[in-house]
Image 1: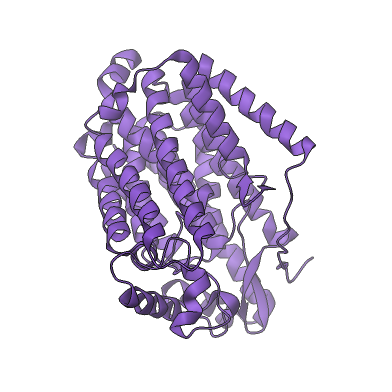
Image 2: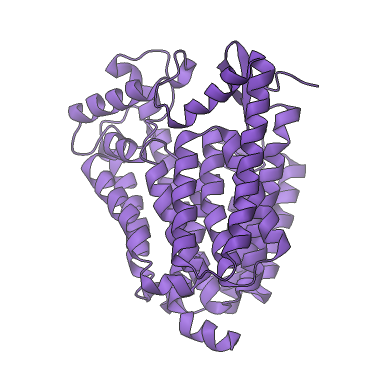
Length: 445
């Protein structure tokens, strides 16, 4: 048995070669064919491809599977010549404006005294990708408002990502926590780290739960819910766990009681299994039941890690962000520049983001990006009114956005396309489902 399943991750760059280019082309062509025939299948392809990037370098940027699938879905929709009127729907407009505002504010930060222009361009392109992703999902849903492939895709990808992450308990996790000199693993699966995994699951889980509560819960959905709960606990992410509880609780409260017992049972079983496994790791490391039990205090203890290495402490990152913003309060220091300029605030040997969406927006994009980010965060919750309780995609978006907003107070997750992309997909589906709710209800009848 492996007693220290924490392995060092070595970043390796892979150039785009003929083989990977051919694979990406096949993926794009398949996505185009699916969305041209059934746009709902194209949305499902976007959901499934999201966490599996297969990064390949092309100049200063990367080619990934989610990007080429997005291009393929967009091309497939163009073949259908769809109406763009769906983007003018009342439930869509606030979020579309938010995506445009974030893109404009991010691009505007190029006028800031940025020392590095390449990261600013990267963040601008990322904001553009999120905007296109949101618009494509809205248009595709308007063309084919069929929730069945979407429902299956969310449950399938939640289960698969969770299982891949849980397997790292034995195969080796990318990071861990030293407790009494013993490394307790923090799983990440195909995501970049445990906090990113907790953010990803915290978005997908409310959608699956909303479907399970609004429609008859399937056994596979209950397995996915239990797996997601287990995975979140094993990330040992305090903010991610709290945000997931808020998102899950909001969806359960707003839903009917018909299938509530089965869903609550599945979630409780998964969470209990995760706690039992963490307790086992604590026991193996300390050989004491008392010390193992004390490990769970991390979930309600807000003390910082003594030696966080190159990622720094949140207190350091937040102080650096405020100090750098004070020096450039209007346009900030330029999108993507914080990790390179943190040394200017007196913190050397640290290279990471600000560990807060709102501080990151403030320091890098100044007042315009902060305002756009705050507006979009609020709109992502308030857009889904009382009608959301009757539409599982809208209810899932409400729960996911509420939890995501809380989580990003102390973490920056939209920086990672695997997480940010899923959030914009959920927002697009939630807003579009409200716009087409009467038609969808008649079809179900």
